[in-house]
Length: 305
Ligand SMILES: [Zn+2]
Image (cartoon, rainbow, N blue to C red; front, side, top):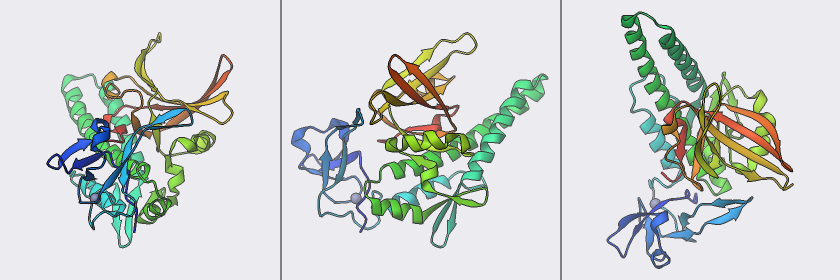
C-alpha cells in the first residue's frame, strides 16, 4: 500500500474534529490528530534544517497506519481529484488526457497557451483604435484566464510530486502520469526539481525547451528592485552546496507586486515557468541563480495550501 502524501491539515479528535493547520498545532495537540479526509491517525513532523534552510513542519501517517480507500491524501486519489478539477474549465484543450492506465500531462498545451498569451499581450499593446483595443483586451483577458487554468494544473501536479515522501509513490506517480512534449515522453526528472536537484537543473537549463516546476523555500520575501528601465519585484530562496562557498539562488521576479505579496520567509512554494540561469560572485561566495519571470498568479503556489 502506498504511504500517502505529506499533509498540512488534520482534524483534532478531542476538539470536535476541528480542522487545524499544521502551523497552529501545539505540543498538546499531537496525540489527537487524524487525516483531514479519513480516520487515519497522523503524526506531527517538526521543522528541521536541511542544506542550511528550514524545512517547514508537516504531518504524515502514524507508523503502521493507512488511509482509507479513496482518501484524497493517497497519491492516486489526489491525482484523480486534480485531473477532475482541471476539467471543470470549459476549454476543449485539456492539459491532462485520460488513458486506460493513467493520464498524459500535455506540456505542449501549456507551451502553446504561453505563446498565445504573449501574442494577445502584444496585440493589445499595439492596438490603437479604441474599438479594436477593446476587442483585443477581451481576447487578452480570455487568453489569460485560460493560461491560469493551465498553470494551475501544472503547479497542482508538481505540488503532488513535492508532497511525496516515499520512493514507491514517486514510481507510482511516474507510471500514473506520463509527461508528453513534442510527441515524446519526457522524464519527471526533467520537469520537476526539488532543492537537492538544483545542480541538475542548473546544468540542464539552457537546453530545456519547456517550462519546469521547482520547489523553493522562501529566504527573503519579495522586494522592489529599482532599475532605471523597469523596476521589478523579486523573491529569493537560497540553498548552500556542499562546498559552502557556492550557493544556489532561486528567484521569482515579476513586474506585478501582488503576485508575490502573500509569501513570507520559510514558505515552501512551487514555481512553474521558464528558468534562466546565471552566476554572480559576491564577497567570497559564488551564487548560481535560477531565475523565473512570472506574469500569472497561478505560476506560484504555497505547498501547504
Ligand atoms: Zn486519509
